[in-house]
Length: 107
Length: 120
Image (tube, rainbow over the protein chains, first blue to last red):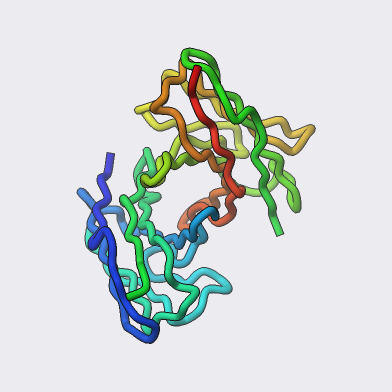
């Protein structure tokens, strides 16, 4: 299995901040790397697919980058609705696997 | 707009079989190149991919669960199902059904999730 490791596990930030979350895979995901946002009591929502492609309807303040084993999710200017848990996910190799999540909290 | 809704017992006894159904609306589960998937999330923990059924008929399961899990489609009802046998407390989780695209497109539609507790 490909192990996905996110850092940090939690993060405190303020509205307007620029935030970066990283995800490292134990082996190459061939850029089949996706990011989801999950709010309490809700299902995850797809933000970024294939490392850097913005899902339709997702605000442009979200962006993804990286290749091979190292990937980054960036939120350029945090909005109140962005405080949530973020999960990276590889869909390259079976079984598909997720990172442990990064909880983004209000400072 | 595709919508998915899980249903099934919220409480299952240890050693019994967990059975959940996902009803899909807004599209036919037998058309297109999609994977109909199940993902679970224990309380306070990360997401775990359980497996999927491709519209072409093939299935893929997580090896950690493979001997216990079955995913099937009922095209007449536009539903797909999860069966997990010999459950233990470790199977207690929020279970999501989901749709995954083909190629680069990962899971893009999720159900709201249903909590299953394994307890006597």
